[in-house]
Image (cartoon, rainbow, N blue to C red; front, side):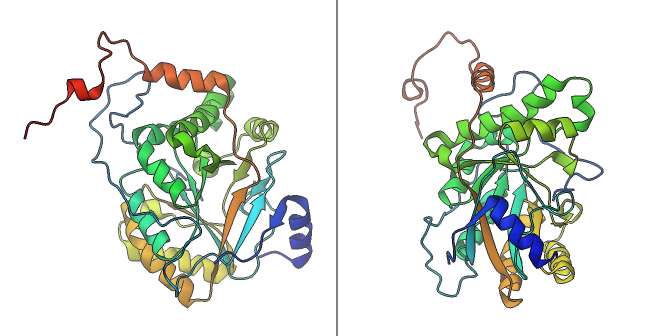
Length: 326
């Protein structure tokens, strides 16, 4: 999409290529509805509806590929996020590091019961992606966040509750900052002992980038992700529509960061066919990982725990309260 000169500059500026390793306008216009299930780590207010059934997924061990014909990962690049670099030509044009027919797959709005199907499809083809979970969703389904980590994927964040921060930051800068930071805390909390998988990658809802918060993320050394092509899968109900959308845009642009949503059922069903068509079309997968894991701030870690710890008289363990009788 851009010239070789930009490529050389970009790689020297912030990318370390590690060699072979075989957008969201999701909310453009109207944000995808956020269901409010009763979370494992409940938000501080509001009545919650019952959560959808939890789903487990088989996950391939990182670094192993049992499929000799897999699409795989052609190369891995390590991102130095110092200063908050931006990626995705819809908004950030400085860093052009992808070669012709190279693709970075990204998924927003999870974790959700649809996410394991995405993980299963990626594992079958030994493909790695970047996931941008919503903080609340990470507290609803922490076990799915851990499945994402077990698959060797990079896990960024996508705000605490998927609010459009441009409408918040002018009125309440602290609330806007909390939307970013509480998501980071929630992802790290969900990962338990796998916090190395939590990386300093962030994507704004609706791909709307308030300048004040872009600057703030720079001070936190968190990279900002836009996209090169938005699948607009949130508008689609059939998996074949998602595949057609992505492949048509790749044919036009030749390479790029692709934005999809593991939150969307059609997308979760589309991934196997999409990977097959990428392989047939000669496209190569590039995996982006961070040089360092993301760090959370104590203030927001404590807020998250405060929300979780509602007062109760009983301190008995689960085994003494719940007994299977049939």
